[in-house]
Image (tube, rainbow, N blue to C red; front, side):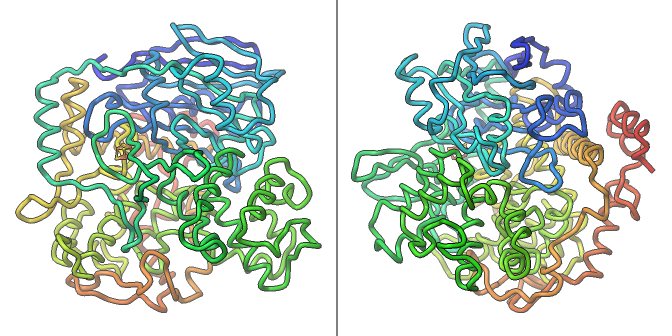
Length: 640
Ligand code: SF4
């Protein structure tokens, strides 16, 4: 099979058995990455099993383009039931760095793990063998420390994905920390920990895939570069790419883009990742206490990675604690946390330690900030509400500011970051143009042309109305689900805006052309997006089987309907393109409930789902070649 390693490894930790499945059984309908993981999960996971149940499946997957050079194709994915979402639901997280490429170089497109080991173990996959190794000596060790210890044992030529103490204790915001400090959120580190699985080790390999049409691939890669695609490196003027004498580029394997991926070396000689959200999450607090030039923001990121905690989730906890301190709800005495030292590195270390080891107030926080707020009740609950999205994550791309994000937030159990980034990419480029930055080219008119090509209508770029947003949501989701089957990096795909085309509109056909060149299977834009639609519907079927209630759960935070928006960190003036691309302020806007509900019905109709319930009928699933899924849901009396 061109593009693929050809095998999936299925490991059961309870009986320490491993078996191989042919990727070809899955690739035709689901391609790879997100689609492959969704199908494996659908087949394996009992719907009522909890995230921490031994039967729970956690899946590591790569895409058919991983190994294709120069196009940002080496991302990989961890999928499983998230203990963070309430109720627990199937989610994916998308990681960079080299571990995914090394898994594929070891001969596997995906690795699925079920069961629970009686004692702590780590897996060592090499030469077609899966070894179950004793991890007792690694218990309680940080995720990065674990990697270092394993490298002392096996040498530098290995690649490690591990969990820290937070994963071992099952903290719901524990993440997987892999080679190059790549981190995957959604609490799947806690799922790994619940299986007594400390780490997965693969040899570092030189991934080289067989392509069906290598010369055509080279031409497409050249065309891709010629469009002038630039990775996002700043958000509203705030650099996400941290520069300076102590930083250096740290691209994912085979990727030529100078994106945000950077490592940093501290004054003490400690080095590690330092980019994007993880680099800035503690910066405001640290700068207020230590000044602008300290290593504290880097050390804060490093501490989170070492404990194996998600910086996004920690960010929300910190924001909530701050609001509770100011409201007089929490203090040093009633939490046992040094809240009076808020913003110091000692405060953060104690907080992370207590969450990871589930000590005192940390035990409450380890169950999730929502549960912590609810257990305190009253003002503690209202202190949290402005900070979070419907998914209970950090409130990013609020639908009061960007109505285009409403249906994306409403229909997913987690913040659908790649989908939201299709919108933020256009907005942030437009804001650069509004500020008159050198070389900025996404004017209101260009935004409308991009919307017409990528979101189905020019009016989809009018951020003051719900008109056109149902079709835009469907198009974004289908394309992004397809993209995550491949798995292409969201920093550089899709090519929506292009510096060097006459109208500055990019090319939505490139993904399909590249896929054809690599795999030899014929795809065009429409047939590739159809795969995305199939995987989206399979994902919907999984959610329904896990208890999702259709329209009742396709909702937004109540506060977005009632509380006017006042401020947004990346877009402080709340400016958006309005009618005819003219700038409009969204200050004081709320989501129009009736327009949202109408848009939701229109969206269901476009998907072929029941417009009243939001549940796909059997015929809609069969039309997407999901007859087996339809039958299963029918037997469970879930379908209308
Ligand atoms: S653009 Fe950056 S994050 Fe994306 S694959 Fe390339 S190096 Fe990795």
